[in-house]
Image 1 (spheres, rainbow, N blue to C red):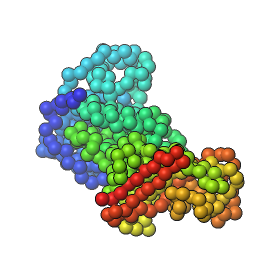
Image 2 (image 1 turned 120 degrees about the vertical axis):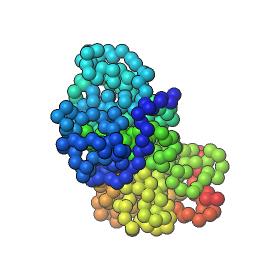
Image 3 (image 1 turned 90 degrees about the vertical axis):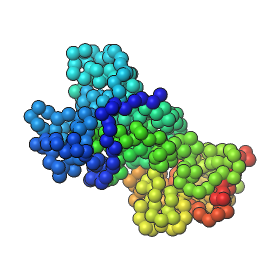
Image 4 (image 1 turned 180 degrees about the vertical axis):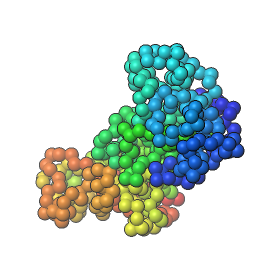
Length: 411
């Protein structure tokens, strides 16, 4: 169901530059230009966004003519900010014992509950309205806010939540430090540009967010409410991976050779090696390396340097292999029975170390064949990469023991 915007949101939101915090600025309108907070000079990195959100009535300053941009945002404040993006026609009766009807944020919290932005099951009997919001919470509320304006955002959340194939390109995905239940909301927030990672690519789900940062986030939120999820390429990649284990159709010009002949048909299905054991594909992630690497997963799998600029697509493959003998990675790679993964190469050490997924690049001995990468009877899951051409007629074809196959072609 689509909700109405408040009539006060008349100004078109225009994204401009980014700061060291990777948050975009928004141009202020004439009304905002008349505001003048003592602690927000026009040169402030978030000044335009602050004055924009104030002029729209989403965020307010304090009685001493300050905005306090460095203050962290509480749950009560963020509920008020987000609820002001809607027409105020949705109400519920809060059951939180610490948000009585006399509480200043009672109407906003109720509206956020009615809109589905706040899930009462997340908080129990007490909401703790003065508790500072975490980035994971903000991602969840923003995603639910988008879902309340366009059901397709809820579909995106559900797809990522209900799939074992979902991959969100943040270091915390493999290294830990993020609640798995929060990943779909982080995916929507990242995929639509509402939030972004830090300079080390981490998301830091438990970090706090300031009033200045939230002002910028809110301008993006207003803009995104007017868009479809399909307008965001990164989100399209996340959704395709969650549904099919690959992003090939979003990133490349490949098409399935026949309906139902995609990678999804062979994921996890075994391909038997004549002497070494049994392997299977788990994921196939594409990065456009025709020019400099681009795509939602480019930083996760490449060093993002000109070295990957090879005029081709680079295919990053998560592979599982169960061996019947103790062998090195080199022995596996050089086997003449590697089937449809002949030529799988070692991953770059920089993104591997940053994101924490497993590859054979653990020690020199494993690379040159002296060590034993595979343990007998153990399912070893790891990433490698291969190339794919871009010319018309290029094909990708493979199969598994049960006869299942995939086939793609550039027409």
